[in-house]
Image 1: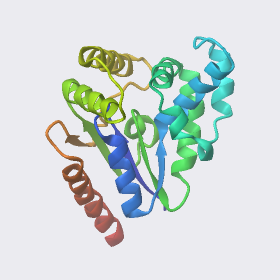
Image 2 (image 1 turned 90 degrees about the vertical axis):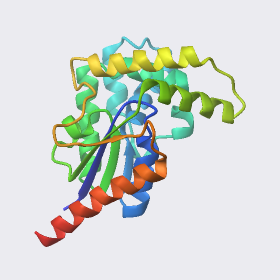
Image 3 (image 1 turned 45 degrees about the horizontal axis):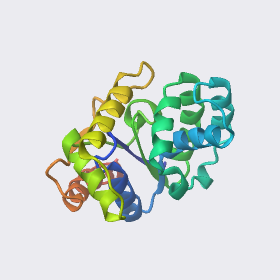
Image 4 (image 1 turned 45 degrees about the vertical axis):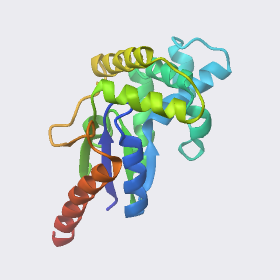
Length: 214
C-alpha cells in the first residue's frame, strides 16, 4: 500500500521545505498541489484569458500534467495571486483533486503539500501535518527571501497580501484551508526548519512502526 503524508497550511509557513525534506528522507514522490492551481492560472494568462472564465479554467485543469510542473516558472508572485483566484472554482478543484489523488496512489507513496490535502484530497492519509506560523513571521520570511535575491519589497504590503490570501483560502465555500481533525499541528513561528523536520520525522517514524507491526 502506498504511504501518504499530507501537509497543509498557509503560504510561508514552511510546509513546502518540510515536504521536500520528508520526501527525500523517506524516498517518496513529491507533489506541491499549489503548483497544479498555478499551472491553471498560468495557462489562462498565457492565452490572455480572464481569470473568471470558469470554462477555460476547467479545460486548463484537465490538461495539467503532474510530471511537467515547472516550479521556476510557476513560482512567480503574480501567478500565485492568480492561482488563488481560480482555486475558488469547485469544478476546477474537483478536476485537480482527482489528479492529485491518482498521484498519491502511485507506489511507493507520496508527500503532498497544499491547503486541503488532509481534509479533502487524502482524508485517509497515513500522516497529516498542519504547518502554520503567524502572519507577521511569514511576511518577514517572504521579505527576507525577496531581499536575498537582490529584490526590494515593503513589509506592510507583504503582510497585507498574506492576510488577504489567508482570508480567501480559509473563507472559500469549497475546501477551505483548515487543519484536519486528526492532523498534527506544527507551529513554526519560533521553530527552525531543522526542528520542524525532526518533529515531523518522529511522527512519521511512529506511524511507520505501527504500520509494520499491523
